[in-house]
Length: 430
Image 1: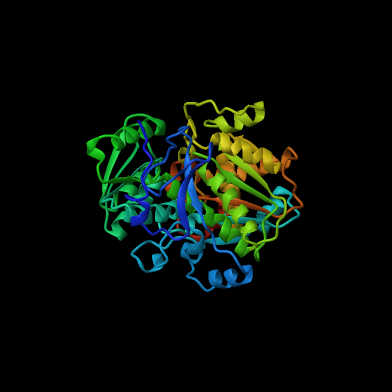
Image 2 (image 1 turned 90 degrees about the vertical axis):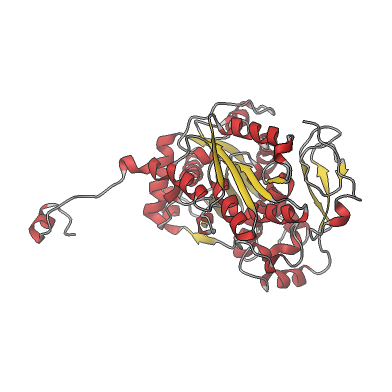
């Protein structure tokens, strides 16, 4: 599909997205006016938001942020959103808990500080609420009437909820075989939910065709034609982690990889904080985590390749089951630049890690969280992650969405008659 640059006279002049001033190609640097486009006209590289960020006294900016609401809009001066965004009808995601995980640290042999950034506390119980909230503001600015997406589950629910709150129609597309919990959550908000026979990559291709058809007129696809804005929502994870650590950059971060966008935007957020003087400049390592059944980036990293070869997903971690990750090459660059790595774990290790996190910290993670905890354990065992440094591990969703993963091996300790004798005989009396 041909992608045309949007003239400032028809788009940029009519929108106000805070400090955002243009779209810039990540490959060739060509700039375009702000608009609903996602690929460079010159080289077909991906576009991202370019800013004129606030300068001056970092301490003054810190005070502005700290005085803001307890959600992502405290960082509005650093995001492509209008200044009055907090007054608009939205789900107000973000500022989720950063849990100091001392019990898990002991189990893993970590002697430094270990934290879990638990994004299951967002409105629809996944980090996708962050990225959708930013995309909604772009959709408003560009006059769209329908919100849409291709999704492995969490995004479909986040779009449905955000659209309901903001007054948009929604129509979202998912693979036909998603976990039942995610299907129900995506459908309950009253929008249209369409199952596509095939993988996520098939769904994504269909959405790209719909954008180029008159049927898609007036539709904002949050992770396609609104993708440059949508992706910026993941930066708020970096902002929050650093603020919650007392305006310090962690030494090591373990991040799940689906498309790879979250990892690349967290790195972008860290670099912005350093450039603005909000945190001290220091080395940090970024580690990517994949499920073995869908691990094209991990394979490329281990083989020393720069090209990520697509795979057909086969894993219980369906929220990460993107066989052709758009940001895969950029993930490789970041992992290598920062001295990190990309690793994977199999389905059994994912389940074990979900249970380990629940047993030690009382956090029930979805399968993506099992991937990050499992990879953290593996990285320690292989010596790639330093157990003496400050480490942050992301849990991006709620385990109630992926019950099927743990249900076969999780249940009552015992079933007894309602008597004290039966309780004693079960050996549970302490």
